[in-house]
Structures are given as structure tokens and as C-alpha cells.
Image 1: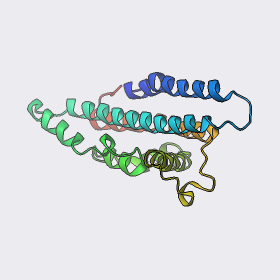
Image 2: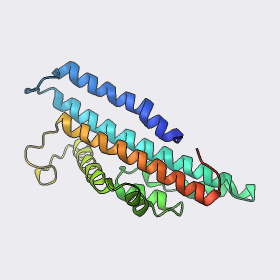
Image 3: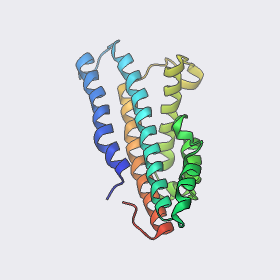
Image 4: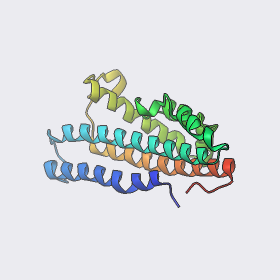
Length: 192
């Protein structure tokens, strides 16, 4: 069974991303060719993809915190522990990059990235795509399309955003499994 966070990612969040792809097809068609208006849709798609993935990561972290805290005794200590585990959470304000994701999940006592890499050999490749997404997300948000960072032309293609989305789908499944297994080991209870 998947966490509520992963279910939300694969259903509602994915549906919202599908709506952007549908808008792209409505504006630019589905055949190859130059379509100038689709560049703005590609930018919007990249921004939404980064936002939705950040939401997934933050939701999964909250779900993990809730599970850990439920198993702490005395019960009176639970509120203080929950507050500490989410205070200053990087995913509340920062991009969903490897540093912020790892820092937040490591606070739970999980060696996050080594465990995710061990879970799936494709993690390194997926992280490269996540890094590229965050570079573009920042370029779009700050209107700073530096060719040294983004490559020549600084044009974002639908296929690129789709490849980022596939990578994030893979990461989300790995994150869910790694956090599930860690929480089960730590508490002796299935988290979801």
C-alpha cells in the first residue's frame, strides 16, 4: 500500500499536471512544428511540476513525522517532538532539491540519500533531472535565462518537462518505499 502522499501525487497532483499537458496540446497541437505560445505553457508546466513535487515531498515528510510521533511515549512529549521535527523544514520554503529533501528527511534519523540510492540504481540519473528542473524553475521564477546554466537557446521543450516528470514519478515511488521501510523498522508498526 502507498502512503497518502504518494496516492495524492499519483492521482490529484498528476491530474493537475495532465491538465497542463492537455492545454499544451490545445494550444500547439500534437504534431511537430514551431509553436511560439507553447513556450509559456512549457514554463508554466515546469513551475507546476516543481511545486507539485515539493508538495509531495513535504506531505510525505509530514506523514512520516506523524507516524514517528504517534509511537513516542510519554504522550505529553509528542507535541514538542512534532514541533521540533517540522520547525525550519526546508521544504516549507525552499526548492525541492536534493539538499533540502535530504536535510528534512535526515532529521528523522534516516540516512535518506544513501538509502534511496540503494533502493533504485536509477536514482542518480533521476536526481540529475531533478537538478535540471530546479535550474529551470529558478530561471523562470526569476526571469534569468543564463545560457551558461541552461544551455544555448534557453528554450524549454515539452519532451524535457515530460522526462522530468517521469524521473519524479520514479523518485516518488522510491521515497515512499524508503520512508515506509524506515518507519516500520523504527516503530515496529506499518506506517501505511
